[in-house]
Length: 202
Image 1 (tube, one colour):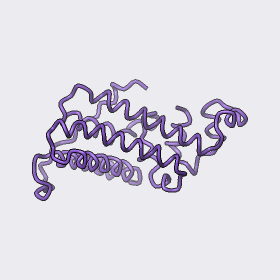
Image 2 (spheres, rainbow, N blue to C red):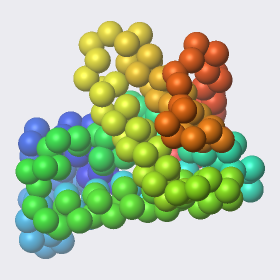
Image 3 (cartoon, one colour):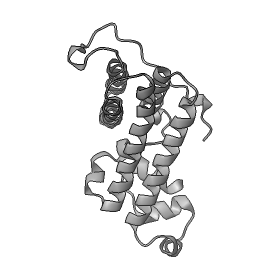
Image 4 (cartoon, rainbow, N blue to C red):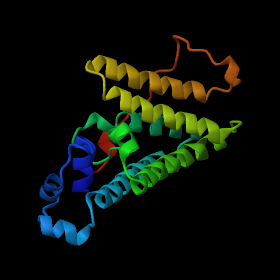
């Protein structure tokens, strides 16, 4: 978990093996007894981080009505960086374009996390009876990942929050029982679901 937090907070390029060993309480020799390379560690750390986040989203959306479950998943995902020390960060949103230059194992694990999240959302869109529920789930997941990534680029906190709020509204519109061609952006969009991070035990 220590390696995941360092990588997700500082990025792949900026994180040195020495940073990881210090966070994990390992010596350089101890690191190489556990991992053959930095890339192998990154792959395992990304997988572990993705599993922690998705396990939490699955647990906290269980038992809810499908629309409420999706709203909670969206709110928690969008505000994952509410606590900068959080261990519940998504590798896709935290590492962004750096993953393009990662090796195939790291890419495969990252895409696997994305696929699992799409399935989690799709289980709820199917319960809502939405036509093409898998495609809508994919669109929702893409919206969430993109919004968090862009919010991290914003220099103005107000702009970052606007990006996240609009993403939450977009999720609501994707769930609206109207044909895709008739979807309109309107000022009366429903207020975003409030994320309650106090219920999460880190």
